[in-house]
Structure formats: structure tokens, C-alpha cells
Image (cartoon, rainbow, N blue to C red; front, side, top):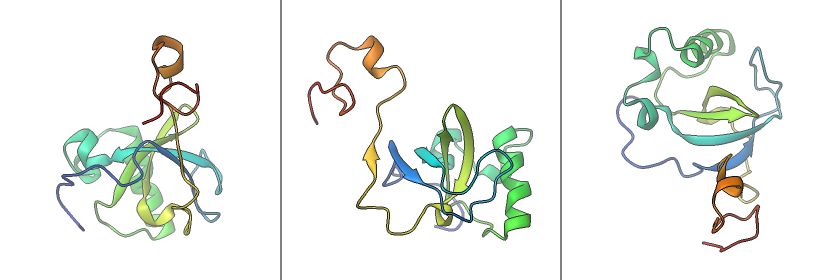
Length: 125
């Protein structure tokens, strides 16, 4: 899908991946661990190209030109640590699909005694 709506979640939504070694971002180096939330389009309901004033979209637009990323909607939102950003699918390290791991929501283990995540060791999905 080059432009338009993503109707299903990204295949790695909720997982931690590694950004490619040549990833170029003013706040994060290549090789950073990145937790994918979902396609930007599914989160915001519109393309990153139509999110005037959104800091993550503005930074992505500047990076797009300097790095030479495709102008399309194959863009995911996620975070490196506590900082959110947009990443094009092509910037996720290749060959990583076998080694991605599920990451618990930030407050999951603190608030939910019956947490089903791998991190706290409770019920497994």
C-alpha cells in the first residue's frame, strides 16, 4: 500500500525491533531498539502527510528528504525509550522477524495483577 488506509494492524505491532544501522534521526542513533505501536494511519486516522504541526510528522518529513525515504504511507509510529517517532518500514533492520519479542505495555505489570505478558511471568497468550 503506497497511499491510503491500513485496515489491519502492522504485523509487528507491540514488538520491539532494531532500527537499521544507517537509521538517521536527530534524536536516536542507528541500531536503537524501537517498539512499534502500529501503522501511523491506524493511530491517527490519516496520513502523516496531513498532520500539520505534529512534531513526529514534522521530523519525519525533514528526515524523508535528507535520507531519501519513499513518499508513501508505509510508516509506523513507535518509541525509542519514552520518545515517540515515525519510522518507515524500510528502516527496520532486515532479517529481524525471527528475533522480535513482545513488549509489555508500560503500565501493564504495575497495575494489572493478572497481567498476561512475558515480562512479569503471568499468564501467557
